[in-house]
Image 1 (cartoon, rainbow, N blue to C red):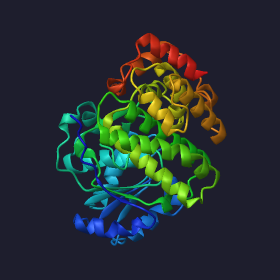
Image 2: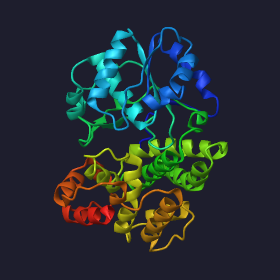
Image 3: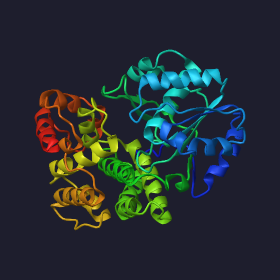
Length: 376
């Protein structure tokens, strides 16, 4: 049975940051913690959000979330939450910050150790503190998803935070906040959005509404990622990419696949997630070539490609072309990854839960071949 999931309320468009104060008031939040990272704090984004909160004097700011979020970072945010006697969270940033906000809302209400909730999501209760997400990148879709990845420690593979109770209450998606995103992050996060839409569409779960959303997201990402990367002030392209990212976040509800499983194989490094998945995507698309049904052809058509029996190879070639145009690497080795324990990496990818909804599930030997290809 197709289930259209209950998503957070979403405000989308230029200027919706002004609606933050009303959303906080509606939820009875008078002392929010503005959760962010050091870069956004330095650029003044955190203060801009604080000013828009309607309770600037009572709000606290914590800017210690790392690019790859850790349990220690969330624990430090909890100390700031308690020190400020906070009663709600506004998470402002990319996927790392937004996922950390989900983890923090659990600890702020239930206490305990985050590792326990990561290992056993059944411990997560329904009644959590309010969480409003404000994305500043256009890629992860974390503003609307029910889970995320938290690293037990730096350079250790992430553990999945998965519970419908952790999903945000409301997302304010204001393209204005993405205008200053640097080109390389624009490219990497934009291609991350594309992979979410592709894997969500190819999922074995039959959900026509989400599939339609995913196909539209694919078309938007391909149409706008180059423009947004080349000209960060292209307002149409920035809005198009933020919508594609939002659609990717919705598509994730259908499940993901081996592209994201491969990213787990290299999770013992500080490499950027968005870059890892886009580097892994061509190999998986070639692996899928000849997949029964017409889903690959539908993806190819959404990308503006010829929709024929070689659709998987065509998609792979187009992603490689886009990566080259965007200045993204063609292999994981080109990112500076030096480890070569293929067996360990294959085992990590093979046991990843992302494979559960893959239309063709790679064997351990398949993952070994894929990893050799992706490593380059």
